[in-house]
Image (tube, rainbow, N blue to C red):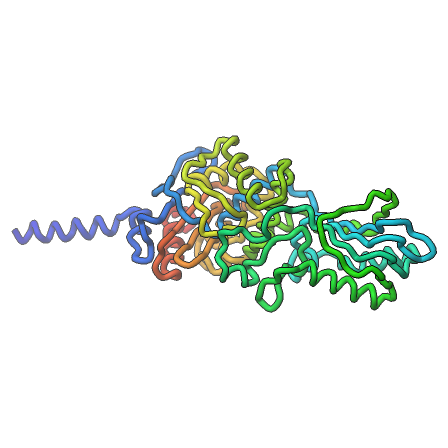
Length: 405
């Protein structure tokens, strides 16, 4: 009897010792197995290495950005740019614009931003253009056309507390300085922009006589408009990289609205979300259990499955830009401390997603040439201690990819 008991104890110890990486991960007290999904796939063979709850409908937090960016990248490519146009809406004669100075918002989220990617100061560009034409007076108004986007600046499902913070600011046809000040959201970035531009023009000795007007009207029918400035952003690739590295919600929401426009729809959040669902469904990605309401993942009404995200990652695995937008583990952005000084340091590129009770990862295992070899999706809802949940995810990946040890 004693021998049997000893043997039983030894067997249990052996089973615990040789528990699979997934069992070990799900057994962590910070991981809620019922509200967690894992999907890790070999991109070349299609073999699924690890899966758990792959069709469970869960909150994605910021890994939603991987879907938004993949969608626009596929639709428009990496080299497009945002354009903010400024026109003299009337004839130029005798040193004056006989009409309005019209700024047409182009949805550029980087205009005046204090982060990468940088672009020229639009006020400097305008002043230089006006001086080159000998203009020192605008007889009409400084007018801003905000008609590019429709619908509310913030999705209705965003909670009020988030909308007040800089990370929860709305997306507009004309954004300025990331629509934030002192860590708080600015609800009317157009007003901040027009005040800045008016002051800069005044300091340069250029007088605007007609005040300021904001609305949805473009150029007049006079037919004597002159392009003064075509302010261009950096290429989409750099905007997307900045969005992923810093997990910028404003950037993501503007990219979503831009996707809607690229698909021939109005530039609303709702149109962008619906078009993303249609796009991936028609490209063979399983969308059962998926509900998209924004582009950033800030809404708690979003739902995705691990298989949905994993399928998109698989389709994007050959894109030469896409994986480079994601932070390298142990090195960059929101992943700078994840897997640091381990064998997978720099061999994993992933977008993170964090909200109260949520910790998610979506991205790739990389080879020596930084090319994706495996897709990785880990969606944890209902987590315990966040640091323990992160550690559990690190340990899972280190055990799934032992060749890097």
